Length: 269
Length: 126
Image (cartoon, rainbow over all chains, first blue to last red; front, side, top):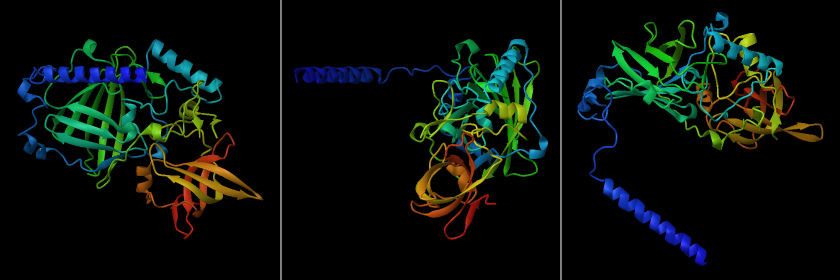
């Protein structure tokens, strides 16, 4: 009982400390510096007063499902990798073949694929939200959020970026086409079939409505990597609109019937 | 109920090729034999309408015994696109389920289509 009382007292003490430190921060200078290369008042952080400008942007309302490719088209071209990256992909392929087609996963199926793969998922739709200074892509898959800064900021220096699943994206409008430039994607993530890239990887996306069909959104993806890619890798993804659809919650661990065991094998429960 | 699968993600992609674009999902479908369809005369035990995959647990009478099957579906939002709602199945419903079975031979599969008790169908039933 004495121990419990001591623990409660300690908790109370901690709460007090937190409260005091939170109060101390009120009124202090903002913690984050203004974005790279723009005046502070241009930042997406100052959105008020700029919403009317958004009406000039194209009509991307609703949610968007990846449109399946033409089955007649055959296999998609794969990235042309350089020396060690090509050798690594080939080793992965050989291991899969030697292992009766079993690919050993190093991550849970509840771990998202990151860019660029997450923009090419067949099962889970996307939505595109416009607010002043940014485009937000909400992905039903793993409830991931992509932020594309359109307030004119540049990328921070690569060495200051923490490598992440979505990297750092900046975008601008060329007419009705959103051009997105992304760097800082983790070099642990695959693209294409089993290949990985270096930390120099860059993804450029040109996203626009199809001229033939306004309910189709086209994403022309171009990938560059001076270390891993012998030539730029280009693929096109298309999405079809469900005007009144909405994204459904995705809490993977609450309904995970496909855990990965210690051997990297996916299970079915 | 946990079973190890022959998981042929890489081989299926690299050797057969994925037609018209790498449409990736939450996990590979290579655990299922997509060339085979099994028809189950089934009674619904549970219908779970949630990501990453909707899911149906059914019982299937076989002779004097009853088998329990786990059927994985696509995402609820994809199912909405083909006419499903979260109320399309209820516990106790007797249905005819068309599934692509697990390669491992375990009693599980990937949903292809269903004929409901009232005769209406969803998905691919043939």
